[in-house]
Length: 248
Picture 1: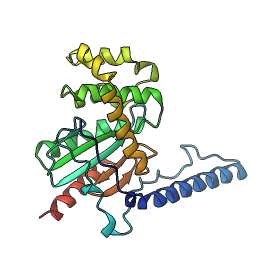
Picture 2: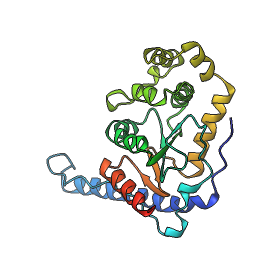
Picture 3: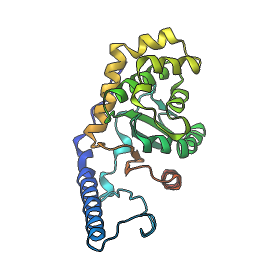
């Protein structure tokens, strides 16, 4: 299987912005807690203000936003869906123990797949496995399912009802049961899940995410624009529609 080209180091330009945003959020949280302790109150549901809107990481220099044109596009990549030459590309960095990845997959992924079906979007899925060994095992299983053209079916089963499975539900035995439930050839699935080729592919995908600074999940790159966190569906729809207009 052809390996993905290593991401260019210039992609790291957005990491400081994400770090600063995270630090600012932490400082704000500490200030809120301290204030609650000082006045004898706590930020409960009764006295808390409206929840802040999700923050989208903005591109500081549009001339650097070429992330959507990297060499990762590979027509034979089983973890990708949509034409290689689709006008818009969405790279998703996820983890099978991440609750926000699960909720995004339930709420927003179906809408994105509609764009895939119309030929307007290509999705490249990358498991970064920041939650540890159970996530890596699930990533190998998902890759094995993708080799039988059942990536999305397997993905949906692992994130059923918009929730991730517990680690003891991500063992090889439990994952093989999922494969059987969705009609995979379990003998081939087991062989592929435990193969060196699958392990290397999963490692390559994870390294792509960490090289880009995707240390939290979910993280997205849509048309070269980074987005951090499970943004609302409208954010992605607007971004895809805007990117499509820019192609004409």
